Length: 389
Image (cartoon, rainbow, N blue to C red):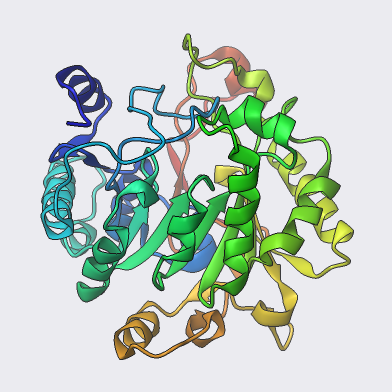
C-alpha cells in the first residue's frame, strides 16, 4: 500500500481524509471562507468558480518531486512509477465526495457560516486535482476525470511536468496546469528536487505537450525570492514551447520551519513584486500575453493570451461551466474559446478591489501584536470585519 500507518496518521493530523490506500481529500481554507461569505480564492476571481462548492482532492498522494516549497512537509511518499495497490476510479470518487461532504458538514453551526451556502456546498461543482502528490501518476486518471464530468463537476488538474506521456494521453478536462517552477535546469533541480535524472527533458517535453491541447492550458509559476524570481526573460522564452492560454504567477506560501524546508519568510515576495514579474514577462513577449487579472489576497496574478481571451477590449477569462460539460459530453472536438465568459470588472488587473468580490464581506483578523496593529491600522485596534469596498 502507498499509505503506511505512519503516513496516514500524519495526513489525518494535517486535516486530510485519506481515501482508500492512495487518495486523499481536504477542505480548502477558501471553501471555509466562502461558506462564511468572506470571499473566494483566486480561481473565483480568475475563472468564476464557486469556492464553497470546490473539492480539493488527489488520486495519488505520491509524487516524483520533493519541492522545497511543498506545503505538505514531505509526509507523502515519492516514486518514479506506480508500484502500489490501485483502487478503481469510481471507488475513489465516491470516497472523496463522501469525505469532502463529511468535512463540510462539520462547518454547520460555525459562527458566520451561511446556511444557504452550506446547502450549496453539498453539491460539488468543481474539483481541484492538486491537493498533494502527482495526480497524473494515477494510471486511470482519464477514467477518474470522466467520472467527474459525468457528475457535471469541472476538472482543474495540476501536474509537476515529469510525466509528459501522461499529459499527452490526457483526455479533455476543464483546465490543465503545468507547474513551471524554474526556467533553467539548475534552478529546477534546486527547487523541485526531482527524482528523475532526465528531469529537464521530461519538463520541456511536458511543456511542448500543451501546444496541441485544445482546451484551457496554464503555466503555473511559484515565485521564490532568491531562488527563481530574478530573470523573467527566461520564463518568457519557455512560452514558445507550450503556447499556454494563461500564465499564473503566485508568490510562494511560507509553511513554517521544517528540517526538509530551507525557505524562510525572506523568500516570500510581496504582491507588487509578483505583479512586476508578470509585467516583465508580458513586456518580453511584446504584449502577446496581457495583464488580465489579480487576486491580491493570494499574491497571485494572471496573464492571458490577447488573441484568444481579449474580445472587443474586454477580458474573457471566466468559464461557462455548463457549456463545458455540454461540449465534453457531445464527444466532438472543441476549443477553449467555446466555453469562456467575460471577466467581471472587480477581477481585472488594476481594479481597486484587487480581485475581491464586492458581494462578499472582507474579514480582517484582530492583530494582538502591537507592531502589526500600528502598521495595519495606524496604531488603532483593527475592526473584526468591514464591508468590501
